[in-house]
Length: 304
Image 1 (cartoon, rainbow, N blue to C red):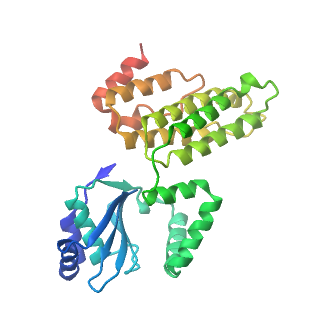
Image 2: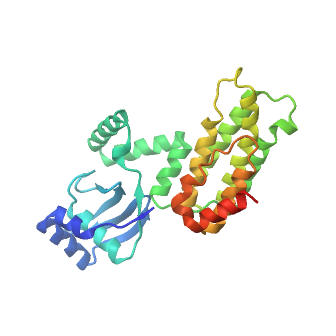
Image 3: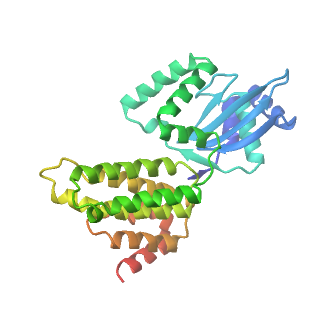
């Protein structure tokens, strides 16, 4: 969701000295490489004495979160480099997006995050880079998120979309093509399909990818019926896979901001064609995207 950064409130929080230093950086043209990233902006600030400082400023809930090479700052009052980046982003007309609020996690998650942040702050830049590279080598989803945050991911290519469409199609046809399938095969195929879509959905959203996710939701709807019928012998809820697929769909819609009437019709087709039960929270979960016009289109398409 696009958000507005209150620059005046930022300058007030920074104080006169820091605010003036940030303005000076912008006035002297020291801010370069402005790049939108998930939740905010990344840039480099040239120092008066030479060298450059890398700065990332993101929005979490109602708070700014700053990651500054020179000031080693994660949260709190903004430094002069953060002020400069925010001012330069405003002047460049960059639209900010809001990350999920860091205060929304459960207490255990908050404590874990605090401990990790403290530990990370004690490491050198090289140590942190090595840790990130090692984790990325083991976790494709994490690697995709790192590349997205760095602004180095392109939308899914036609080849990638063709591959994932084939995977969804093969998953959907398991009960038709293989008469020896077991419930375990359906669950593993569903989990594999979800994992690949979650990785691909880290990339910038496209209408084509949204269509693939809709195909996956329909495919899992068909498989979920088999699990529902065998609930007494196989301990898994279809929602374990259905709900993350629905969350992907909503997230892509939020990023794409499709035409409300078109979205209403798409949702109606998705819900209306469900044989088992649609996991998509329509129309309530899409209320902000649909508006009155889209809701009318949804209701009309669903009942005709």
